[in-house]
Image (cartoon, rainbow, N blue to C red; front, side, top):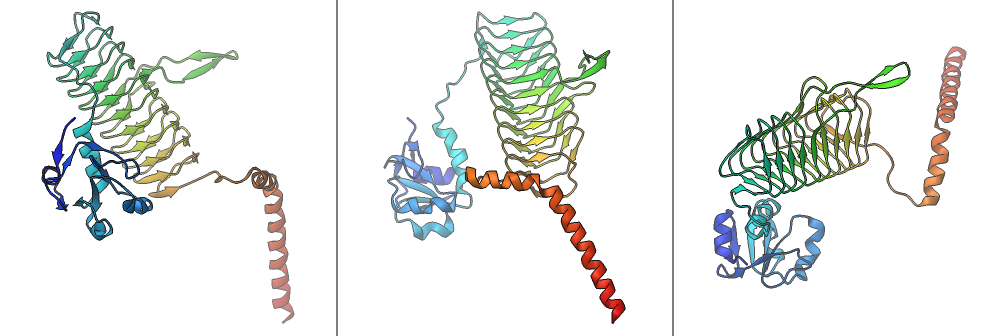
Length: 348
């Protein structure tokens, strides 16, 4: 296991040591589970109560919380971001070696950088380009004419259909499918006639695609994900969708075809976004939102109801059914009140 002194960590991540700078750390853990060999962090105020109980050897803290902890600490402006960076020092993910596994099937016209790593039973079809230091996991499929940038990581059993273009440092988790045919049909005498999806998929730099997430190819032009877009597991991106830079989506969300999402948006889990909409920059949808109209003003938006006891929820549902009738009655009351007001003014 790697070992670091607090002084080494503070220097590396621009922090200040409070306590023993020579104290040695050999692991990372939460405040609740940390031992004397571990480094922990406090990023959320609701966990401050654990500071007095933690057995951590040291804690990443904001400067203004220095007096709240009597043990060793590294003081920083953003402990959570520092924790994210420190996590790579203790990452146990195996490092792939350059080269092509003998069981991989590679088309003659494919161009594989000699520093790339191609796993067992991977299939790479004609005219594919794989950039420097990129890893293609075992049993992955890379379709014709795909372009994959440098320093990428495609996990085992990922699938890229033909004409998928990927930027630098892209991560694609297992089970993800990029470039599947979009959900496009025309009606012919009562039967569905499939429309050929002749666009592709384009991903910018630093994009991450979660496990079992699907990004459909475009019907005519490409489905496009900008730089630093982050998609969680089990997400559905419809054909011709465009997602702006630095937007993140939580699990089980979905975007219907031809919708445009702006930059720096945050989309909560289980959110559904209808097709052919435009969402401006800097919009946040809380979990389980149902988006049926375009959004032109930045801000936070919500829909649905929060959790209740089953008894309370049944009452609420009964009232929801009566909303139209209640609205009609209120309108009639307002009309009568207006008439009474007019009559009173006339009589005075």
